[in-house]
Each structure stands twice: as structure tokens, then as C-alpha cells.
Amino acid sequence: MLAFKLAYKNLVGAGLRTWLNVFVLSLALVIIVMTWGIVEGWNVQAKHDMKEWAVGGGEYWNEKYDQYDPLSLNDGHGPIPPEIAKLCSSGEAVPVLIVQATAYPGGRMRNILLNGIDPSQQIIKMPTSLMNGDTSVINAIIGNRMAKATKLSVNEMVSIRWRDANGTFDATEIRIAGIFHSNVPNIDINQIWLPLDELQKMTSMKGQATYIILKQGMTSAPTVPGWIHKGYDVLFEEFDKVIKAKHASSSVVFLILLSLALLAVFDTQVLSIFRREKEIGTYIALGMTRWQVVWLFTVEGAMHAVLSVVAGAIWGTPLLYLLSKNGFAMPKGSEGYGFTLAEKIFPVYGAGTIIITAVVIMLATTIVSFIPSRKIARMKPTDALRGKAQ
Image (cartoon, rainbow, N blue to C red; front, side):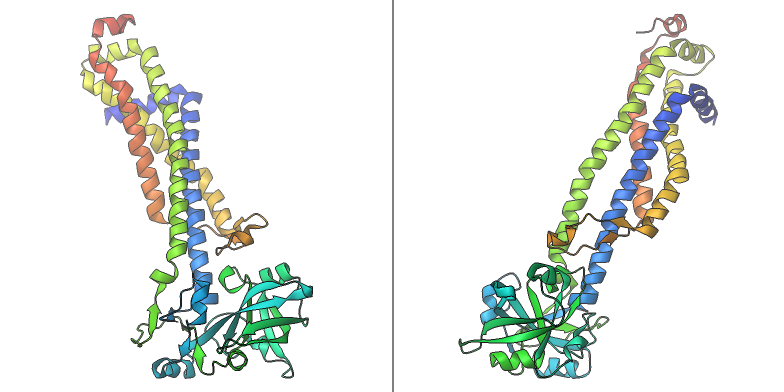
């Protein structure tokens, strides 16, 4: 207890030097928590948007379909099995048919994917009900990214060409009935969405689908021959790799930032021991052992971390709270990165992250404070009192 009281008095007596170290450590703490919160917030938002707009509660893929291989679309479809057809009729699933095609917006040629989906579905948030317009034409919807890339607008007609199940080319005009805004690029970039029955007629694939989206909250999925169930572990695999890469790159920045803060504490301890040799000799002469004095200086250094946590809580909590409420605006053009990214990211701060970061800073500061303090154990009291210890 005596060591803590003496350490506190010495820190307060050091004045500005102490508070500069405390501020640097608190800055490192707040920045680390804020950055991890932004990455975790992105993770939570992106997965929520993907569930709401694209994957629902999971998917069934035709066994020949591979979303990363466009050539698999030629054979990656098949009749909807009775087990899944029951789910579709009860509103617990919706089939999607994908066909490669070419669009000609404004006379330009663009390779696209035609996606057929039931306009009355309620599984995902896509406004498919907009397809229920004028029945004299085929109504379609596109995402805002596709609209910008092709310069298409609502009610505009566009020509498309595709190849049916027999390999015969066909073409028609469709009307853009609506443009939706989504953070999920997988359902937007180079995609046009049509009514499922229309696309099945156009391609001579009546009753067929490429994959089926399940309703969120389904606790079990039956085994269906010829179809493979894909859970979140598979559907989010690529995104999880991006998040892990962001965590890894952030850790390097954290290490550099923390090292600079610890260097300030280390230099302070070295300077303190050099300037306070007479004080150290006095402590030893009054009966304190050398290791008790080492412990005293180590506690002084460690208390920098304790004070930094308190200071970080005082000025960092309002800042982090405002950031979590107002969000972190992403730069313009980030929607073209190719992965799910909202216009604003709202950080999510976990108690575990805050505690672990604070503990790491405390332990690291204690170790860095102990290293130069070991010199005290080799001092002679007489030399220390004269200020000539080596």
C-alpha cells in the first residue's frame, strides 16, 4: 500500500510529464477501441444486410451451380424438388433462376445475369412487387449501381438477348419498373431481376431454379437429392476472410501506436531513475530493500496505464458514443469495391474488446516500466546518495 501512495505522489509531483504520458496512452486506447469497433460494426451491418437482401436464412444450390464459376450456369439448374416446393408454397422459401444474357442499354452491349424471382415473395427485402405492373411488357427491376453503370431510369425500355435451354438465341425488350438501393453488390452489379415465370418461359426452363432462398429463422433444412444446403458459414465465408484481413492489418497499426506510447513511458522511467538517484539512495538508507524500490518505480510506470484508462474513459466515452450514434461516413465511390459496404458504418463496441485492450496496455506498461527499474537493484546506497550511481 505504501508503494502505491508514494507512486501516486511522485506521479502527481512530476506534473506535465506524467499527464503527457497518460494522454498518449489514453489516445492509443481510444483509437484501438474505435478502430476495432468500426471493423466489428461493418461486420455486423454487412451480415445483417446480406441476410435481409440476399441470403435470407440460408440457400439451397443446385449441385452443379457454383456462384464463382459463370460457366456453371449452363447446367447449374434443375426442377424444384417437392420438398422445397412445399416450402415455397408456404412462403418459407423462394426459388431463383439465373441465366446469362446481354443487355443493350443506349445501344451499348453489356454482359449481365437475368435473375428470375417470384414478385410476391416476402423472403428478402428486394421490392419485387414493382414487377406487377403493366402486363403487356416484361417488367424488371435493377439496383442503383446497375442503373448508374447503364444510365437506365424507371420506365425506360432496354433490349436483352439470351440463350434458352436448347441453345437457341432469343431477344426481347423489357421495361425497368423500379430501381432499388441496396448495400449488397451481389444482387446489383450487372444484374436484372425479372418475374420467375416470365424467365422460365423465355428460357424453356419451366419449373426450374438455380438456387432457393430460405426464410430467416428456419431451424432445420431437409436433405434434398441434387441440391446442396448452404448455411451462413459458407455464404459468409468470403466476407469473413475480408474481416479477418482487416483485423490483421489493424493489428499492425495498433502495435505501432502502442509501441510509440510505451516508448514514451520507457524514456520517462529511464530519465526518472537518472534524475532521482539521491531519492533512491534515501529510500534504501531508510530501510527499503532494493527490490522494494524497484517495485515502487514499476508501480509508478504501471499507474500511467491506470490513469490513462481513467482519462480515456472520460474523454473517449463521449466520442465513441457519438460515433456509434452518428456513424462513420464512408468515402464516395466505396460502393464499387465489390463487397457489402454501407454509406455509413455504425461502430459496435464489445465489452470484451475494451477490457482486453485495457489489460494489454496495463501489462505492457508494467513490463516496460520494470525493465529500466532493474538498474536500481545494482545501485550502492552510498553512491546513490551522492548521485554518482552507475
